[in-house]
Image (tube, rainbow, N blue to C red):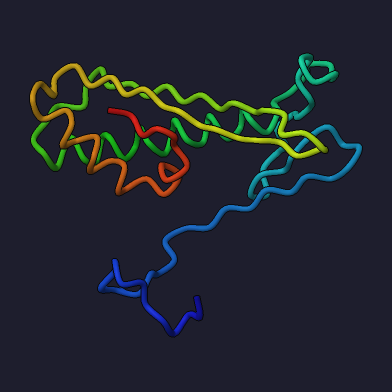
Amino acid sequence: MPSSERSPQSAHPPRDLYSAEARSLHGTGRVDVSGRAGLPVGAPRELGGTGQGYDPEQLYAAALATCLHQAVVIAATETGVDPADSEVTARVHLGDGGAQRYTFAATAEVSLPSAGDRRERVIEHALRICPLAEHLDPPPA
């Protein structure tokens, strides 16, 4: 969509809040993140690697869990729910789609013990806040 067009869902044009960068170079066994020391990366044993370092699916699961948990805390606070003891567990599943095509699925579980009957409302609000949540299939209930 050209930048001059607005999404029908948004009354305000988006503005940049923060940017991060990651760079992966062949043969280094690391990914450099936003100018900081690199994170060790590698293929998991299940895919023929050494299992040393983090693989892309682990990094994505970590990003998803962190993003969704921050959104849950914001949504809980705005809804009058205490986010203490909240927890988000994200899982990423890599599949074989054949002909060197991979499939990808992400799921998440949200624990929000103090929400009571407001739990569903908090989670729905959190899913709207977290931009990575659109990749969840199915979204957490």
